[in-house]
Amino acid sequence: MINLGIYMKDLSQKDCMAAISQEIDNARKLGELRDASIFFDDIGPVDIRVNAGFFNSTDIWNFTGDLVVFSLECLEKSLSYVNNFRLFYCYGVEPYNTLNMIRTLQKNNIPTIAAHEHAANQFKRLTNISPIGVSDNLSGIVQTIKSYNHE
Image (tube, rainbow, N blue to C red; front, side, top):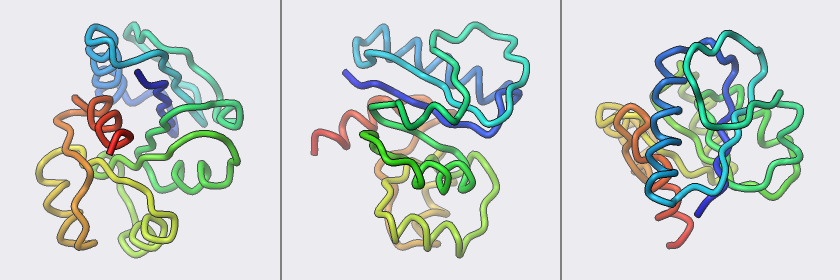
């Protein structure tokens, strides 16, 4: 079982929040998830029920577990925190600067999960590195992290 953290710039991304909620519920049903926390920089309306705690990103320093980020901005902020979490980048959800992404991921050896098959192919083309897994609309992220942690 894992302790999952999600770090987003803001909570108003309805499609992303719905996918996260579904993944959390599925992982709980499968017994793969101990707890889920969602961290944010900017609060926004959350119109769906999400079975997770919500915290401002300033509380990440207190988080222990596996932290998934969707943007390079959140990735770079997360790298500045010193704590007991493993960091994962989900490629293909948010826009990015290609050279900055490659430099940051390689310098810090960040495992990457592709948000969909097209993103996986694009990531491989840009970096010559395969993502550790491919998620379809964020489905299966918990299983990918769990498999990666046990390699």
